[in-house]
Image (cartoon, rainbow over all chains, first blue to last red; front, side, top):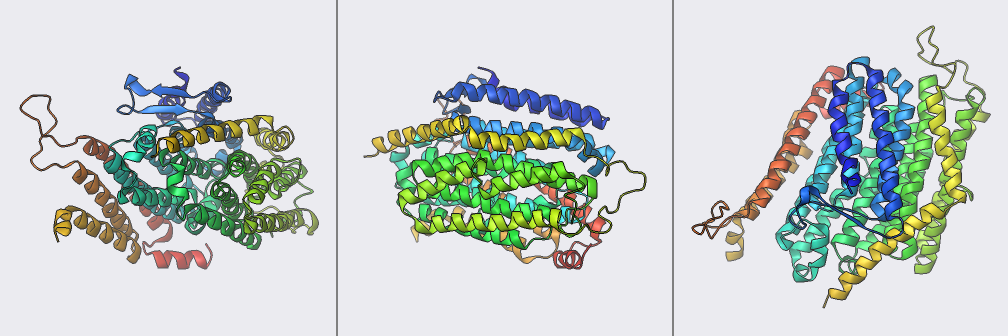
Amino acid sequence: MQTTVLLVVLPLLFAPLTALCRNGKLAWALTLVLMLALSTLAIHLMRDVLFGAVIHYELGGWAPPWGIEYKIDSLNALVCVIVTSIGLLSVLFAKSSVEKEISEQVTALFYACLQLCVLGMLGIALTGDIFNLFVFLEISSLSSYALIAMGRNRKALTAALEYLILGTIGATFFLLGVGMLYAASGSLNMQDIARRFADFGSMHLVSTSLAFIVIGIALKAAIFPLHSWLPKAYSQAPSVISIFLAATATKVSIYVIIRCLYQVYPVDYWSSAVLPDLLTGLGCIAIVYGSARALTQTDIRNLLAYSSVAQIGYMILGIGLMNVHGLMASFLHLFNHAIMKAALFMAAGVFFYRANTTKLSELAGLGKEMPWTTAALIIAGLSLIGMPGTVGFVSKWYLLQSAFETGVWYAVIAVLAGSVLAILYVWKMVEALYFRPAFKVAIHHVPSGSSGISRTPAGMLVSIWLLVFSCIYFGIDTRLTTTSARTAVATLSSDIHIVSGSTP
Amino acid sequence: MDYAIGHLNYWLIICVMMVGLYTLMSRGNLIKKVAGLNIFQTSVILFYVSLGKLQGGTAPIVSPEFVLYANPLPQVLMLTAIVVGVATTALGFALIVRIKEAYGSMDESEINRMDGTGT
């Protein structure tokens, strides 16, 4: 089974080749080919593990726990599918957007960086070695700092530096936690650590390592009090990067949290402490706070970024509720939120491409000029609210079910309040685009004779509508997503069973 | 007391770490901030290396003469972490160069003021 490692090796081979390209169009074509190959591989992998099989791949033939092992189950296959398919669609979207926003000399480097970012995320998802995970985490983070800094406004530079400082603190905390865990267990293989956990689990070092790992990753995942870098970074990055990062980066970090909590540390170990309540509480605050801040924004991209903070809250809430439906809701929301947030940021990207602005006041009345884009924005926005028939409804449904099962009434209130606030901020966009009188000169700072404003490029339209259709498709036909979420939960809980069985 | 002296290396590492964090948080100059970040990362490297240290231990050579040897794995891991640290610092400095070009300043509060008043 060499397909597993190809997911990491292919971008590693393509990235230097792309960086050498002189021609931006060639670089784009190479990236598109790579993304097509990667998403085919990821879907292939997903098919293999969808019903509970687990693939083990030993890198270089070294047996774990000494060698690095890639372990693929339904959960990380799902993450791989998210990363590669969103990557493919954003590259499809990228062509004209990058031509406009990135200067010709650095286009090839831009695409090479994007490939490295995808490489890092796929590596995080696939690896079963916790130090290897740190290395991939830094590969994806470093390339995303560089990508964010390529935004057109100079604020992008300060946003990237702030993200770099906070992201590095997070990664260093994670590394420190891994070091403590290694000192206690003498192993870096996740499965090996979990299997022998009873031998060293009573040491104080282990609980400290858990705290460092969780806080480090929480910084990367932008969980509520540690989210300050996210709105700045996502609103200043080039459009393509906002789309790609908003849909994948935080999801991958959430995946790492789930993986560490369920397959490195035994559930009994951390669930008796304050952690589940902390996750539930922070999740609820994030939902309300993120949605309320989104409501006060005047720029579409800022609004969407704050709404991301709220959506991360839903995923954390699902983990904190500690039952099967809650965890399923988190997995489903990983997938569902990736689809709808990518679609929304793409709509914002099209507005920026054609009107050179994403400020709501300057976009007033543009709904009649750009009916297709605005329609896509509205459908994805309805999904964000959680309208039945869209993907957003499915994950919220499972989340509410889980909250009722556990009887956490304040989670129910937070989810409902979040939905009401979501209605308000989506309405705010709709109102500006459709019902406000057109801003006299709706188009700004366009060089004369530019054709960019008159029509939306085909690549953009295709990718945005593919996402909108999958928003509706996976909202009605939920078999694929719920099966993979259920299998993933089953895999995690079977490991839980083994671990708790071996504890004396 | 024995506990304190026996863990002397760890106390020193905590000091280095705090120096890094304090520099990072207290300085307004971006270069100093990134330098503080670098010190912070270095403390973790020291932590790993001192984990593998063994009193009187040698390099792990397969020979009957060397029975007591230091754990080589933390050192190997730190080679990777050093590379990551270098890349982070380089990228940070590159960003600061660009910031200086764009804003004409490297002071955080001045930059914030310029952003606040509109670009």
